[in-house]
Amino acid sequence: MKKVGILGGTFDPPHNGHLLAAEQVRTALQLDEIWFLPAGMPPHKKSTATPAPMRLRMTELAIQSNCHFKVNGIELERSGPSYTIDTMKELKRNHPDSQFYFIIGADMIAYLPKWHKIDELSRLIEFAGVNRSGYSVETVYPVHLVNIPAFDISSTLVRKRIKEGMSVKYMVPDQVIQFIKEHQLYES
Picture 1: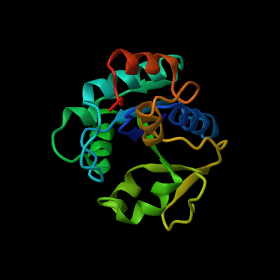
Picture 2: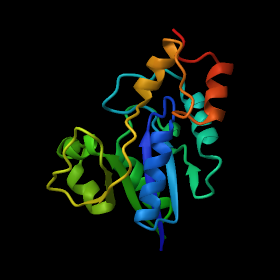
Picture 3: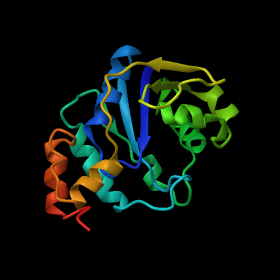
């Protein structure tokens, strides 16, 4: 059975923290692949700064140097709020020979009891949680904990730095920086 890690997010923009977490979980749990799933309409966010096709393209550019990384646009094909339980049911239906590990940061571990249909979801998939400074990893749900090197970065920080005209080199893959410049994203 193929072991596949799932890393969801808005990827607005994708950054090296995403790539670091994905690679560390892949190697620690000996996963065959990591699938990046850009979110359509995350239920916990009202909107994204960038249209979905651009976030999808930036994610494709970000992962292109790692042959174990793939992009799956399944959540972008649905309308309305996108719940993880619906996505995972569809992925399991379409890929019955795969075991899925949903990668979450420590901030999401604490939030697990509030996830839509969490009990059903936790029977469907495995969770892989990565440490993040300032957050507890305590939970009543089973989570494979993976310690990763501290790299305190977020898409919010990247957008803020670009808006203020500051460098994001080494925070974001060069191909993504080029795309951001070409499309003048996050400047205002």
